[in-house]
Image (cartoon, rainbow, N blue to C red; front, side):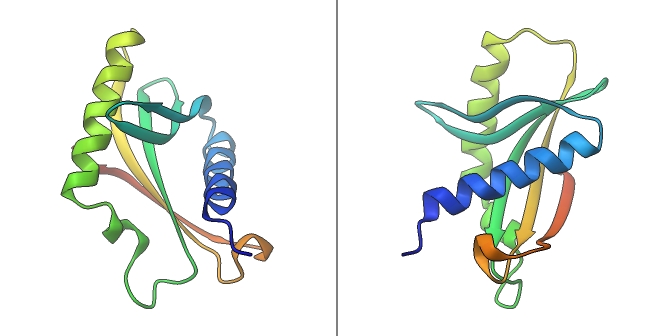
Length: 121
């Protein structure tokens, strides 16, 4: 049976590891509040990054990032604003989208990861 929640968590863990290899520090996974959820929060010396992870089998129908519509962006911004009000930082906020393409789901040996930095303001 296909479990969306488990597969989503797998994708978020892949994204977090991808950022770790780029020398980012993991701040939070699955931060949620009444306004919404942010899949991954990481930071480096310059940025606090709020990451939306989109996992798809392929980009044949549409790119994964296309599913981060204006309504989703607004929820992420609002959720990030709350996080920032509760967690003081001098770092510049940034919103990224990580597309993960895994044709065999969690059985995919080498999923394709595409990072879109500063995907929206």
